[in-house]
Length: 426
Image (cartoon, rainbow, N blue to C red):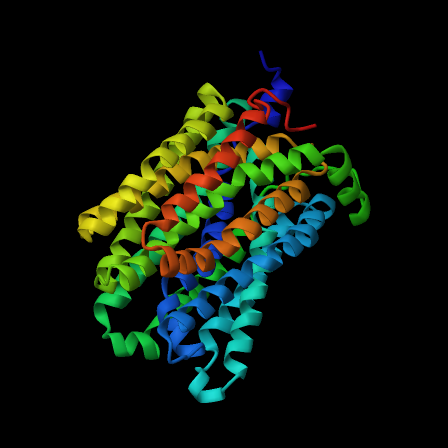
């Protein structure tokens, strides 16, 4: 039974504090993934080429480049969060994402300023990646450290759920823009509208993040090198298992995000219809991430990580075959929803177990590095790999890529400890 002091310590934080973490995180992921949704039009604006495939491949490669500053962001902002606190780090990440988004929204096309256009876009993507690399660690740490012991998974599941919100809102905005404007208008300037929407909302996220409770009461380390050394010596096994566990989540999340491009380029469906699949996918990720958090509090982290991943590994190949065979909107929606809901469940549980494996003094840095490295190596290359695979091996090839990578993630999940009863205050 908890003592009165423990009851006070684990008192549920104000709803606005959780909302602040979720709102900022959702906005940052919205900015990052909206590039994926409109990569076809961004390719035409900044990477023109007579070969449509080369133009799109260049655009998705620059999308992937944004992932490669994530480890640096995880390192710099993660250690900052373990030294100065979670709140300060989370305000910093929102500021950086604003800079990156402004660079994308305001840069003139290649026709207007020449080679400077793709260079600015590349730099903006690098800044966005830096911000997101440092976002997940502090946000996940704050959510877990704020939660009552028997609700930690549900609190932490808002991390993955907020990504679902970002996908759904991005899909809604994308649908409205795609349904309202002609293809010529979309290619010329319409794709910029979703980025401008984000810029209008970011100041609100900064304001409400200032109300976040600080959960790191007394930093144990004040040296970046000391924090990093301890993580990669004493917690090397946890880092490796965490990266491998997130591998398949990173890839299937990108498969879900890629479905819009897949529907437009490979299935040749209407862009507005393709955006509907994104909205439904985001809603599924939101709902089933929270369900996973609830179930992980009740039954443990490992089983909720593992079984959705096994189910997706078994289902994705036949679903892709049916999608390519029928080229129907209904099948597109079914595939997208199935991929995103199962990814949300497994990913949400992983983002509970991984922070719980790390001590509080190193948690933000450890989680940031695990997430950033895993997502960079596998999520950052996913859209480039998917585009290349489809071109050379056919439209079903992304499904086999998911199957192969899922095997490695399942092995890592089986090797991870059950963390439901650990004390996250230590």
